[in-house]
Image 1 (cartoon, one colour):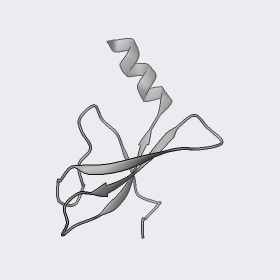
Image 2 (cartoon, one colour):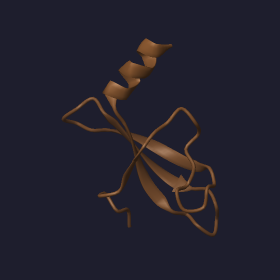
Image 3 (cartoon, helix red, strand yellow):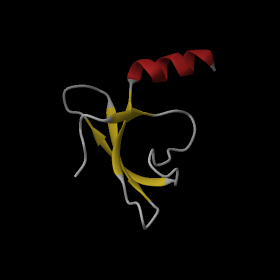
Image 4 (cartoon, one colour):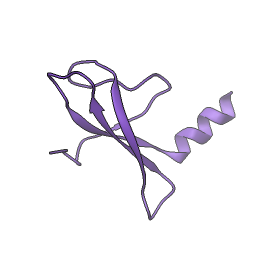
Length: 68
């Protein structure tokens, strides 16, 4: 079961499992009342399989775009 109280923020690096450090697979979900996107990640390590949420914030994307 995913703990929805624990959400990680995305960076410009590939997302890895916060428990074991292995790369993860994900599915995108758009939050209906905002423009923010959530990704549900699953660790690709067969002995871990930790599931976690990653959130994109539009404000972060605007800051990164402005700096480039």
